[in-house]
Length: 192
Image 1 (tube, helix red, strand yellow):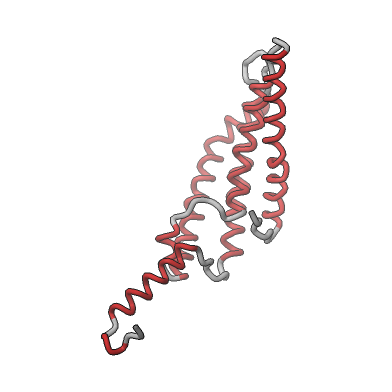
Image 2 (cartoon, one colour; image 1 turned 90 degrees about the horizontal axis):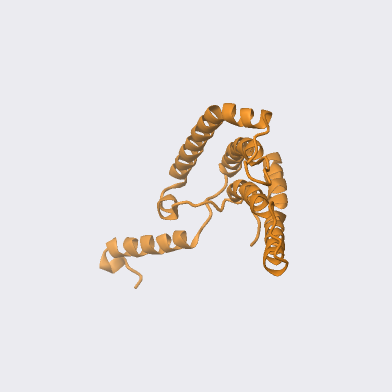
């Protein structure tokens, strides 16, 4: 996979998050392997591997969405987006960023008090290992959403004057348009 170019300071921050998150799955696999060896080979299961893998995987999950947005690899409905003119694509872009900003504002507004309380009392998971998953993941959700909003605005600004990218679907749409255009021409004007 070829990565999308980094276009500003927000992209650099997102790229930094992603580089940490890229190594985290290897850490999860390593500790899970350790757990399997300890449990089934030495009959000495651990108390900490399950919660640690949940903790790290939660961080991976959050930052993966941020990286996906920076790479412009998030899910889009190409068939609608690609057949409309560029000015309407910009309207769609504005609408989607607006909806994202409203969502981020609502989640941060509604979740800040709880995340702050969990962080301040260093709330733990309540198991034998008792890691501070709620105290760290709840604030990380809000921090990631904040950077997600910044990344969306950064993408909108950077992509505003760029030409629309051609996808396979866009090429198929052009073929269909061309065939429809030639079908509507009088028979004597066709280049068949």
